[in-house]
Image (tube, rainbow, N blue to C red; front, side):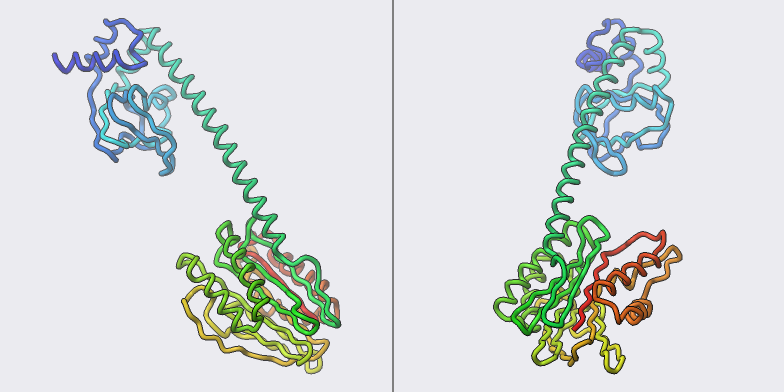
Length: 388
């Protein structure tokens, strides 16, 4: 008897049954069951057949959609009624967020109560309208939040675009041009060319692992460090050491950066360089027709706290070419998952070697795009072309 009185009290305190007759509450209390769930227990799962509706008496439950916490419900709220009304599988998973006491009304008893008592139908109608309004309000807020994120990403993309060099660089006979096409709105590729004086130009191309917001932050750190270091000491060893000291402490262990730094000296006709895991730049000697790779010389940036660098040097003559690129070019895939590859890149460069740097750059992107066909761009693509 005491349990029946307790259930009647629970029903009387609920929004659903507080306005119905005491006789109806007593009848429902006869068939409704108490059901307790300890914290983290699953009350029912998405996709299951709806066999009952639950009134929360004590504690709090959480609605899960694809393992994402969508909403919390507390004392007085009902869960599970939708599957009983539309006769469809459960649309979400309900779990106990705390220890929970519920009143469980089986489907057959729920149907009987609705069919027999208009006041219960009206109460259910009010609950459903409230849930629809709440759901609409949530959707509006979610759309507003998504739009804010989109605006932030667009602004981040604009900032990143502004960090890249604009136009071409001309220094006496030297001509340079570059382009970066990110795979996402915010990419992880970055290149820079900085005239140091009348005879020297610093070139840098890097690729942060992945692409997205965090890559943009690492790229911003790299740019700031690079430009600061170039004002102090532009030698390859000093620049790459400074970059490593910045990237290593501030990035998680899974973030690192490949990068190649080249110091072009027009007076000595030399390229001094360090290649930290970046795709091999290509140096074309016009007089001999030789194509030289500037191979990897050290670990990627940010992998180890201290890296010893051995600076390498190549000579060049006016009319030679230098091509720097990221892995998004040679690893671009077509619909058959074939990669563009180094050989196609070399052939494209050689086929357009008598054109301007801008035309060579356009030819490379055109051939990569044509090769990809309907295949998606999976990685950032960057090309820097220099005629020395």
